Length: 300
Image (cartoon, rainbow, N blue to C red; front, side, top):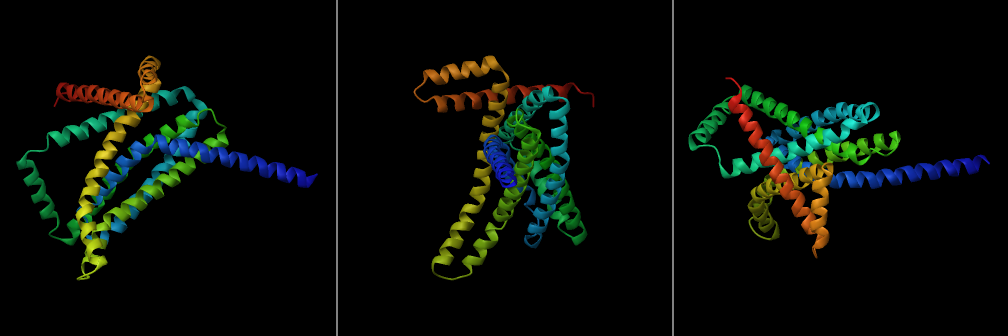
């Protein structure tokens, strides 16, 4: 009998872990837009740091990210337990913010800073690199800024994940949120560390005057900057898709309209994705317009 109880318990544990794995996979898919943006932003934050300080800076930001999630996960669980109706508005708010941020990035891409502002910024950076004390100060500012950005993105990841496990037991919610937090922290900052060290790898391989290593080094040096740009573009597109998807699912009439068009099309998944992306773009433009109006109306 005790043996039977033991195997029944083992079977229950295996079943819970199986459900957790499935829910974690679903949550990871839904948070892909935030992940792409997180990668691009954090890789950009490390830019300008001395080569030998890149990894220590990434580790410092990763530590800050872990602390952010230690704060956010219990807060999310508390909301789910005490005010579950707040999850949907928080999801909508997170989705809107994603779309707003995506539009802001697109706007900055089409209307970059004036040349004078760029020149002043470069002069400021050059001035900061004159002494070790100023370099340390710049490094601290970068770490602080990256951790603040991570807090916002981590909050979005946690809220989106919470929306995935709303109907699950408390144990499953804890395990899925913890799993996503761990995977995202290790995954994002592991990849960031690899990305920022790509150029070092390329320079190392180029030192070999001939042969395959030299060729690979040249290819890496050629592709590394393009990788950063592509990450930013992919992250921006994913922000509209994920943010639009969250918001359209929160507005039944809009969701039904997109579903109607997609079902009537020979490519339902593609039409649905485009519909959610366009909805995200429209929402982002509205949010961006509202913020700009508020800025203009706000007293100096």
